[in-house]
Amino acid sequence: MVKKNIKNKESHSKMLNIIEENERNYILNALVQNPKSLEELVRFTGFNETRLLKRSLVYDIELPKEFYFAKRGSTNIIKKTNNYNTKEIKKIILDALDKNPKDLSELSMLVDITNTRLLRLCKINNIKLPKEFYDERIPLQYKALVKERREKLPILINEGKSLKEIGDYFSVGHVMAGYLVKGYGYHNLYETKKSELKQLRTKTILETIEERTNYVSMLKQYEEQLAKESSFAERKTWEYLQLRPKRGTRTVTNKQLLKLFRTYEKASLKGEKLSLYDLEKETGITFPTVGRILREVNLDRMYRNIEKNDRISAWEKEAILFSVYLNMNSADISYFLHLPKSVVHNQWKKLGKIPNNSQIKRFSGYKILNYSLASQIYESNDLGFDIKETSYLLDIKENIISYALDNRKTISKTIIETLNTLYPEEDIKIPYHWK
Image (cartoon, rainbow, N blue to C red; front, side):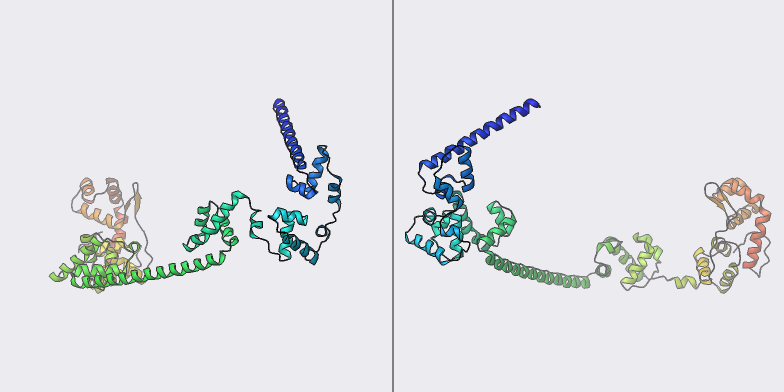
């Protein structure tokens, strides 16, 4: 590490020596041209006055005495005054212009100030200089670039290019492209063209939307005409699809819909009555969905629940009313009344009965012994079936049958009391009931 640092220091010192030698030679070559003033020497070397004087002292270069006095206090009116907008300054610059200088450097030598300060004073005092005087300050390598930008910018703007596209053309960013547009005086042109393109784009979008709307309306009219000329099933399928246009709101396919309405049409022509469950078997659509589809397309169900409810007699309704006070679940009550479980459950719901899950015993493997199963076991036993035959007949395990037979006295008593409550006109003494 120490050796590397020593090498770096040595190379750095060598570079400094080379730079100092070049600066010294540069100043000496400028003095050979016999400059008349310090400012003329500044123009020859490119250094500012302070740096030039300091370098001359460091490199032991003797300058004329008037050069040092010119730095401390000049007799030039322009350098003395702080008020740039004066008649004397304007007169000095105009007198220098009357001598027809060739370039800006010659004019600044006549006035005895730097180029930058001269241009600033001309701007303050509204003095117009020839165009070539300003172009002289721009380096030669940038003149071609400035000319290209000045000529190409209005063409790109009129073509409707964006700032990003303009920047890509000149190999700059979109922010710099905005500065170029504004700097070269094309900001108003760019904004005008931008608003025109925006209006044109909006007009095009509105025309496209109008064309698509007209096309969609024509398609809908054509669809309606085809639906009227098509079959019953196809027409009803089209009506349902119009009600639910989005696929996310449909739970069935078009094939299932066609099959549903064709089945419905065939059954209605033959005079058959198909329940929602029958339609589910035919089409594969769940029966609640079938009912909803028929309702949405204004079709009546062929077989209503009202017809089912009419088959419940008055004494069955009365028996269900008495069953509310019994300690049995709806499945056992429906078994003893020879009714569907849903009928008992719905009647209990209307009466405000809270369904219970009463059971005799739960066995391993989620097997349950309830009163309806016990009644079947006792009935098969009284008919002469043994335990194995009863197990095969009812598809239950033998341990459940053994438990029911061992506790027949207690379980049978509860079943007989329930049956006498449900059938008060009969004198039931056995734990099962025949319809």
